[in-house]
Image (cartoon, rainbow over all chains, first blue to last red; front, side, top):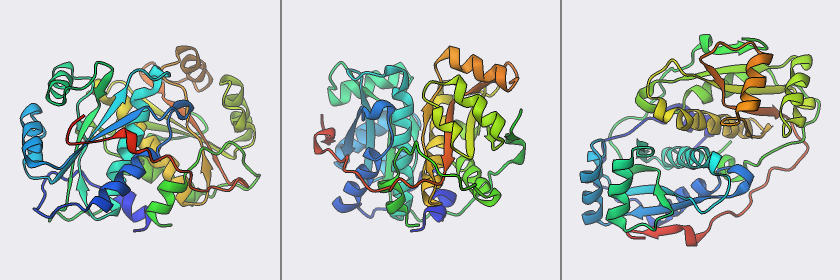
Amino acid sequence: MDFLDVVFTRRSIRKFNSQKVSDENIETILKAAMSAPSAHNEQPWEFLVITERVVLDQISKIHPYAQMCLQSPLVIVPCIDLSNEYKDFWVQDMSAATQNILLCARALNLGAVWVGVYPNEHIINDIKRLFKLPEEIIPFNIIPIGYTDVPQKAVERYNLDKIHKNKW
Amino acid sequence: MDFLDVVFTRRSIRKFNSQKVSDENIETILKAAMSAPSAHNEQPWEFLVITERVVLDQISKIHPYAQMCLQSPLVIVPCIDLSNEYKDFWVQDMSAATQNILLCARALNLGAVWVGVYPNEHIINDIKRLFKLPEEIIPFNIIPIGYTDVPQKAVERYNLDKIHKNKW
């Protein structure tokens, strides 16, 4: 799919049908995630990849905005390994990887949505408990992914007022 | 350009030739930036778009890693407007917009690089002074953009050790 079509038609998708996501597509999405830039190329990310129904249902109970995990056949939870250096930039690194995941899902004709977790300590700790994550591993967000019957069309967000040429 | 080719061949480009970036391409890049997701769709971003040589040269003096602004015909400085709500998520919102800029540049056969600014207070304040930014506007990073003679080829960053299926 053409890049500009992907970037302009990516929407937050919260409704999914029952079609499974293939292992090949999951691998492509994870490759896209790991192709993101990171400060000093540290690549500080880890990825929980959830496809088992019982685990998906457990995630839906942890986060008030993650009910769609009851439907989605796939959830990715990008995590940071805090034992890496360049801690000033880890949120930026994880966000770049997340954006690659969302766009790649769209390119594969899937839908996805970025459900924020960090910096909500309560939800972070619930996810850490569910997956028995090591002390230094922090879940960053929850990304339900799946096929959808919702049309993914472009919306106009371009706003000339936000552009400042050569001066404020 | 196909999405997967874009995402897998995007590299940090720090050398630029003298070819200018067209106004049409600048508009496409800014449209891509503003197509990013943001918490509660707040779209908290503003964009400084620099094409005047004297201003580009001034930016190069502010940041030790921004020397390439002496060469690049275009620099975008995404900024956050802190008067928006959802402050917990502004770094994530700005990073998603930044990643869209980097990928869109690649799709247009341009090169670009993410030069980190936030949370370095010293550099933030120098940029605020240079552009006389309002109190609530914070520069997030510096993105030099231009045509390059450096080949943009895929590098393998895929690492199976970072994938955890259904459990840690």
